[in-house]
Image (cartoon, rainbow, N blue to C red; front, top):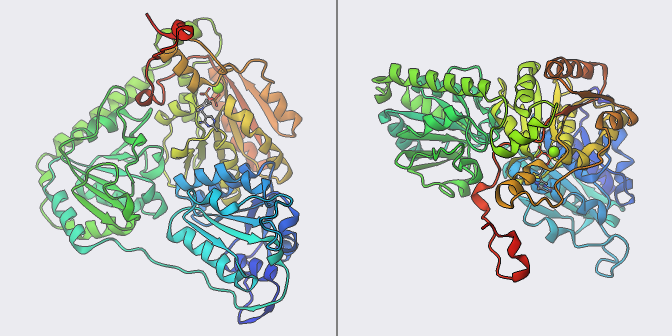
Length: 597
Ligand SMILES: Cc1ncc(C[n+]2csc(CCOP(=O)(O)OP(=O)(O)O)c2C)c(N)n1
Ligand SMILES: [Mg+2]
């Protein structure tokens, strides 16, 4: 990969430059080394400077893919992810990826050159109002209203993405790249976040000291704050079991004896049963999102009478979804350290029953592992019928094999789909910044481009995407990017010949009246991969799953991208939205046959 060998330094001092130079030098000052996008005339004057500025332009297949790559890049590195495109259609292609980054809290800077200021509003070529479109999916929008402010506003878009923990937009009328200005390149702001208010930390420490069954729930905030080691220390001090919030399985090391696995859809029963017994929950770096705390496996686990301490860097998240006893507006790492300092040497009520609690943790974890070992396939009527008629692999067994073969230090992105969701039970990590799920925006097509971006930021780590075949149809175009730009990754594509997650709703609620859920006449995805210049293998047997994953991950070191097409049955795990669907009710005579009698 053509990475710049050393990070370049920006020009210093007030001086004459063009707005393009001011823009590019501000990117340099912000430490930008990689930008994802598709070339366009709107910003060509600035693009022309990228190579000499030491910025790699990664040319993608679709702007949505570029936006997700910027997201994956920022999630693994903690640095800004940056994407750019042509005004109008190039920019509207960023909408989905920006919304996804918004809900992943990723500091992505979406650069949106717009139609020229001299013709704005006349309905010329590639014109649309670019600020309203992104207004609800960005944390901040900078509009360059004067070419002299190019550096100032560019810098602010970068600073705000970190300060507000989410994507920002930098909108630039295309004619404003040209001209002469006098300016100085701003230095990036580095603002330290604190632990939270003294009184709320004192109150939280008292609650934790008096807790007889404390449980810690670690969320994405722990990952973003680089606070995993501090979360471990706090858990060890309290000897408290630790659950991870939904799709943040990398927030606490899975090999640690206090780790219990994730809450939420297809999460760990051990985590659910243990948090259900808590008298005090410390929710560390989590907004306690509504989808992530829904009852699962028939267990309504959220402890109704427990005292809840919530730590979040965004004050608006405190007490928003769940009632809380103490809210701490602070950084998860700093708050964990402040709580450790307050609890150190203090007598802890939980010490009295420590042995009993720890044996419960051990027993619940063993029970869940045993259940997973025995849960080789789904057991509902539809699934049994489907797998009876098939020689393909059961998805759960295939996922267990992938788990066992997962290389050290792997980064795994997961898409939205039935099999990807079931994989939540089998994804365990020992280092943070390893799991990149589609989070609460939940868009199909997220996982593959996101892992491509992650690989650019962490080229030495194995990069693996889990993708359903429907979602693969949306995103496989980015194989071109992998091959062209030499970004080697592994895509594990689950071929069940259906939009399975939605089909499950047809099965459960609509008496198997299938509309638009079967993916018939699909190409061989392994053959498509080969035709596109990548490696492709069709995996039919369980015994081939692990060796294939290991070989594909090893091939990344030789620069090879591999698609592993897993042939699996059409059986389906529990549905996503049992909470939000209802059996059909019809008033019109012509639709009566759709009502169950
Ligand atoms: C962009 C987008 N379109 C549609 C949906 C609705 N949806 C959710 S899951 C799903 C099916 C996913 O199918 P596939 O990727 O084949 O995975 P499977 O469920 O079969 O494992 C669909 C269509 C969505 N979440 N995102
Ligand atoms: Mg599918």
